[in-house]
Length: 636
Image (cartoon, rainbow, N blue to C red):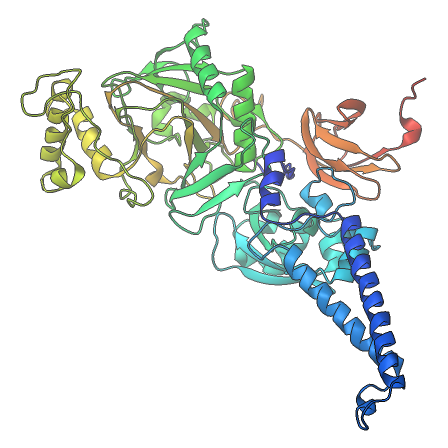
């Protein structure tokens, strides 16, 4: 999606907050003030007691020379020493209660309410005045690791990369108080040579796919931003195979963070855990079995960008769930995962639910659509994603069932995964490998991987594997299925596991196709495989382009971006929603800047009660909306 669609929800879900609590002792500002005052009172009591004791010593008959050590000629000195003790105790208190550098950031809050990241980070700097909470933080010496008294340092990375950053320094006025989008400030500082396309403008993202419009959108321990040129989409960064991170800002039915694990850097492939629930998996399968509409019902899968074309190298069955509640939830969640916000239906195909029965498969292919695959229809849509056209950008595959053997998603141009990242053990067989006789009570196993690796000929190893499973007669020598099984055992292959998913990109960040993302669905050797996939485009897909009456050609729809500012004058507890999706808390004195589009509807609610709805008008590039108690309805 175009970087004109600039803002994304950064709202911690409940379990995210619980996870953070496990990493720290969380106290409100008032509670910390009470602790500090308690320590101060205790110190004063100790000081008075010490003073009295020393006075007693000074007035008692003691050996000569001792009095010089207990002189009370300067009580201030005594109190100075005692307050030094107080400062020491305060510092030790901080060392106990503040989190370590690797734990979650401390949240200053007088209220035990959920706060967005922008509402949590350095409130006093945003408003230009020190809040009560910041006064407490100042008293305790709390400072952001990436900021000094007057400047904030940022590490600026290229889209999708986590190396060779440019370090820039911003004064706090630029970082927090500016009415400009932070990208408008940062991009000129890094220089036009930093990344192609930023001369037309850019947006900034966090590593988790959330928009960064000001430094308030960064959590206190964060100092990294990723530059996405205008017209391009964010790509998740990674430090290498096996790297894991947790996504907390997406509201999940499992109430768990999404775990993202890197499986490959090129093509960029991630494994997703906790991305969908067991109930959602069951609902998708149920919907696929009950859809009756001819164009969407479960039937032999087709290929191509448009129409229904059967391919003899795609033997699975597929149904399209385009509008059910569960399909829409997963589609919106996928957009959040990819850093595309707001959700735009034109940027995706319908959710395709797939069933692979025994021996069925899908030969290796690209999701990115080349003009050769659409034939004469190529002139109706510009598929050149590196230019002004649009094409499939990313694919998310959901595994809805376990598979006894086979059914992997294979990337034949990549080396197999390290054993520590992905193990593909040879499954137990229900057939006796020696006699070839199938017996439900048999426990004979297929040759293990070390035994098969001793067979230098990959085709011979595949034959031995299939014979051990007693399915060799289903895959003829020299067939595309037999060749594919060899690929599935020797190249990068992800084994389907129920309730896991994979995400991979079919394009590079600049829109060029990544041909190494060629992949296929391996033949099912035992059992049955259910899966679902969603194709996400880098702009409106084919079918949404409109014909130019002058040229006769279909042209990409151009949406006019609108810079909108939402403010609360004096209403407390309000929250801003894009349609029904929570955006951020709308607090007095804290404008929310959003790049949106004409026709978009923004709602303000308190405790799920609708206060007001604002619709973005057409033709006005800059629009401002103010919530005032004078405009709210009154109730008798």
